[in-house]
Length: 395
Ligand SMILES: [Zn+2]
Ligand SMILES: [Zn+2]
Image (cartoon, rainbow, N blue to C red; front, side):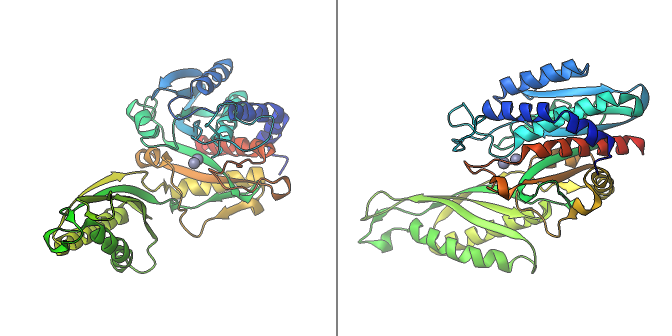
């Protein structure tokens, strides 16, 4: 739908959008260390005459557009961090920072939101209310940047009425939009577990309590028992990630440590799964005569998409991309995003923009050292964000 006004304007600025994205890609920075990125964003937003706040949650930047006519406040969020990994792409804009790479596409989110800001500033007279442009540090590592930004008041003054967040994905055809009402992503939790027995000589097993055996029992039986505690069809991911214990072949160690991850569709199911897991651990250690300590780290909760905002986004997306490009997920996504914390506070919509292009080789998964995508599509994402905010402020 090339006649969409925002899309026309964004396409006219395509060269600069791509330039920005490649510049961020080349100078990839880790979470809470995005100093150069934040500086570039700040400079750009100041150039647009926005009110700009810097140093929010260390390296976050927030731009505020106040329109002359009063109305609601919309927010748009982009994450700006890269990942601790070595890029293997041989492109002119490959990361020059060793061991740091934009392998999740946050460089594109940053560039798109800068363009959305330009589009909305240029069309300010048509808008009423306010728009906040939130450039958030550190999405991909824990503890992440959303919570400290909220604590520092990013959703207040003026209070945000609705928030929009996009994530690109090489999993979907270029230029397609994907969204889902209600829960769109999983809730995750990490656990660290120490199983304590009583160490001794392997020749006298009756005098010791073997934590290696406890670990073995736990790993195999918990997979089955966890499933039995969930209602049929409940999506749950339960996996051990590490196991360490022992020093020699003839010693029963004192303890074995394990860690892993529990992921469910809703925060309530996560609580239930954690409780179930602890009961299983209790039972097995008691049977074996051992003890345990269990630490749970609640990670990103599920993202809850406001159904009204999902409908609004789909309609705005259709104006820009065409109705045939709008898709609804039938299942929850197993990846997480800390945008969930913003959407626990205010109504929001988190959506995905397809940036896959197999012919150009842009089909590698996120977090791969070969991750790259079709950045000629970013004008589309910028225009959808501008159209969605315009429609939101109009209602
Ligand atoms: Zn990521
Ligand atoms: Zn990401």
